[in-house]
Image (tube, rainbow, N blue to C red):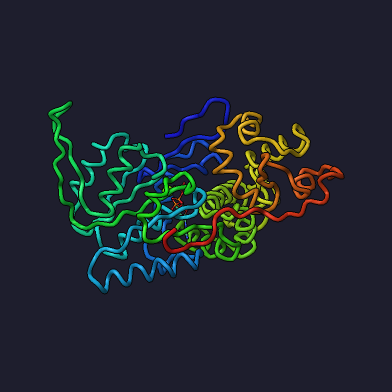
Length: 373
Ligand SMILES: Nc1ncnc2c1ncn2[C@@H]1O[C@H](COP(=O)(O)OP(=O)(O)OP(=O)(O)O)[C@@H](O)[C@H]1O
Ligand SMILES: [Mg+2]
């Protein structure tokens, strides 16, 4: 269920599989359980059904196929990228492609090494362990995880104080799939233990169109090409948002239209839900407004900016910022966040002379999917 965080419209919503839905606020914080069930039903089950992310898909496909031929579990897999791009979906696909069971847990659920030991010691051979939000695990659990990933062993501590002894426990080979929106927060020793890292990037419109047609089919909604294109272009490059907007447009079409997702229904519904022409939502615009109107275009520190929009720094940094940077509205500079000319124009404000020189070149801080680190 959703919870309102103090002073903000961001809500923490967990999906049926326990993963965090940090994009929930984009349309309606009170995402119902029903909607989450629908979302789960829209997940592609196999790599061949997964549109977009061609690089990661190819690389992961190779890693999995090789493991299958060898008849041994593949290397550990780390998936990183902004919320809603398919990390949880891919983790499930890894298990499905290997035809192995999937065990799901998350960093915040593992606050003590003992929590992790309990999970690890109950794994079967070849099982896939999905560790969502792996950057939020406790330090002691992280250390235990290094050992388990590399040597398939955990030291279980029995007793307390001077009499405590560590009993090594052998584990059957298994595969960890870690997911994180903040790869930069993972300590290097942990990152190094993943044999394959896939970095998910925002989807292009063509891939979102494919995803939306598929989702409309699964939902039994009639959708025409213009309607789907309109939604795809305003989904912040994010499948979760695309699917959610599709359901809102469907709602609008059922109440005010002829039940068909077309361009008119899409435009009306998206206007109603505060998604603008460029696909920016309320939080995105709040960030741009604060940056331009209150801080003269910056540069301004992340925490100051977050306070100005009434959000947690983490939310601004992981949910709003990646897309705004990628689309060239804001820049990350050593002195803080700065607006580009595109941001001023988007708000319909004159571009100040001192900022007109700035191009819209985003600073990419993470590359595409890659092996190792
Ligand atoms: N390539 C894709 N094709 C079709 N649907 C997708 C794809 N990627 C994601 N989705 C849809 O978007 C929703 C969100 O995906 P998912 O839960 O895998 O994202 P995530 O990266 O784990 O996000 P978070 O960081 O919030 O946990 C899924 O329910 C799924 O329906
Ligand atoms: Mg997830």
